[in-house]
Image (cartoon, rainbow, N blue to C red; front, side, top):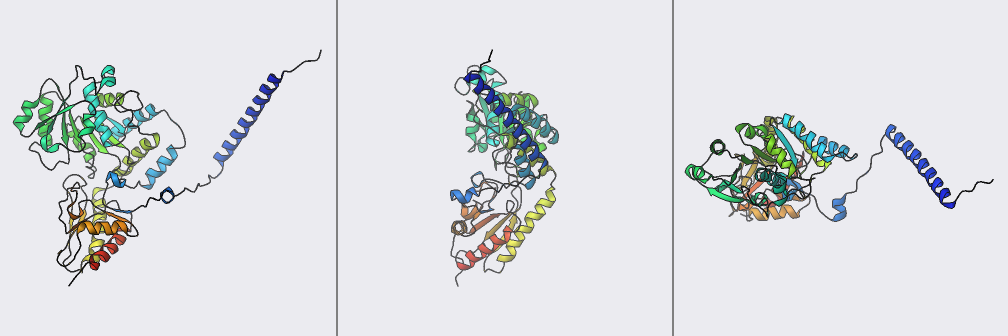
Length: 423
């Protein structure tokens, strides 16, 4: 009896054969590729393709200027991490354990920037791991503590990162104010590490809060170097501390560190991506960035504070050498006391002899080739680097320059200042 094969069976068997054949071919190709010398892929210059002009960073680690350049080791680690998938929760757990050991604290979490760390850290204190509360904040605050004590001089443009969790701020100025501010609704005592004012020290802030059984949160986003600050504040007693990953640590711009008590870090994880329906769900950090920040911490811990400062001073000195013979120009190397605690170059001049303002100098350099960005404190602008300046002041942040770029900056500054010289 002649067997019959239906068209459906034929197609099915043929399809299976094709899949098997393709799998063998792909597997063979994959194995061969693994044994062969990898072929370098030439990247497309999308800055050029999109019409966006890069610049020499003579400003610093400002977010709007895309912060820092990743060291080669960090770039390589991220590129390798991009080639394979992993379980994101496993990676967050493993990276947190590794970072906690390296940074001498109980626990750590990689976040989507320091501001995201402020949000999920505050959420941790508010919700204390309660799943119903995690879903409810910031709208439903029933039964939750939601008062955050802060020094009046520590209010800043990152308040919103905490207010996302449904809290309200209680401002204090004196120690008496602080002692009296604690109520049964107090959830956090918040400290802005780079604040230029405030009557209450870090140590007193921690001591009083702990006396009342309230956790302390320190926003130290821009406060490395020195390297030791990565553990100084947790060892001082702060229950949560955040740092930006993309500033002095030289990690990916979209990363941050949340360091501190194990129970609070665990609660922060519950409020964070990849968990759905949480205040931190949109604050996603990918596998490449997590690995990149871990690699950046390793790189940063291998550096030396004195050597870094010496290099930055040398860059500033090279610029000074090119400007010292311009009439009325005076230069000074200055280190801000807390945030961005690295050498900056301050340049002043007589505006009656050099007829240009600092802001005009900044614009000339921005419009030139190559494009150069000066520190925003130039010309009396933002003093967020801890640098007060006037209209006839130029502030150069040398620490994010690439080797040799200080000579280009020096030449352009000389051209612009000499061009405006009269008499």
